[in-house]
Image 1 (cartoon, rainbow, N blue to C red):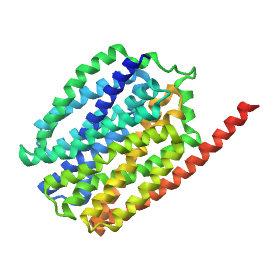
Image 2: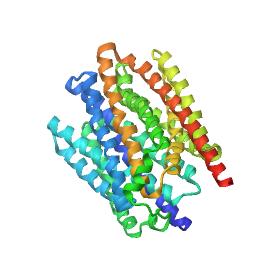
Image 3: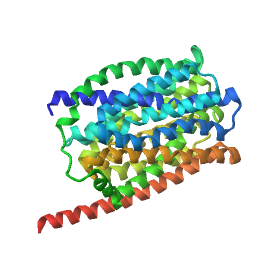
Image 4: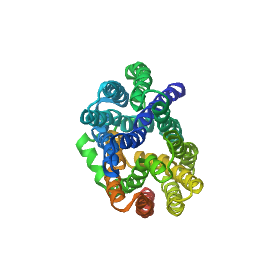
Length: 402
């Protein structure tokens, strides 16, 4: 593919990535505001935030299949149309049960993006996947940064949190218009060729030890990320007694730390290799979890620990997404990206709900040792993953030498 067309596709996918997280990262803040409005406990609050999050995760699995069958850019286009329609319904709905259902379906709508977007980028940028994934994550993190603060600003100075749906609609409409052009041109069509295996046969390759261990790692990585970020606005509100606007600002600090994480993580992934880069940043994640656990009574130190945690977590994303591309065939890469997001977002919300129940029983600070425990399991799985990939690489070298 020509460099200009590839660059346009990367910018379009990356901007869509920001849009998806603009919506997705608003849920914990909205849930924290609704907790005060409805007098909920931690279990109900985290459960409400988890409903669209689970849909966001589990919807990636069928989303990956759709991306493999229809193509990545058609899948992104359909997801954006669906997201704008659901945002409009949320704006005009007052019933709490209907709102829960609409948030759930909004989560499904934006769940289609990740398997489709990552599939497109991994195909278009075969030789520079780490850097392309890092840039994609960098732009996506801009949406993450804007999201919590935008909800806080809207809720504090406008008409309550529901007015944020007007922002989602206004941002989504241009992506629908631009997406139609990419559907027609389909930049992915000119890139990586599919292997001759049938879809079902190719899907069986995902049952090998390396893909399964990647999914295991992503599950526990999702436990400590989803659990912590879902609870973070409530932690700032209830433990540190911050205002709505301050709570939103400090939550945004977590995502500001993602900016250098994505770029540096992408660079080191290309330079060191995915397994080594992943192990390094997961180790830093464990160390940050210790700081967070020990500094829960000091806001300044706590924020520093949160920022290091955010940097190291997001620095693992380029090597993870690159590794997924390296161990899968083009035929089923969308499927495996879908599975990976079903684990790191869908299954992972079981950990979030468990943290909500534990917080109601033992207090909100119980979250910190749980996050530390999950980071340790994540680190152990990265060490095992690195070992297996090293052994497989040696076998491949041996076979090629014969």
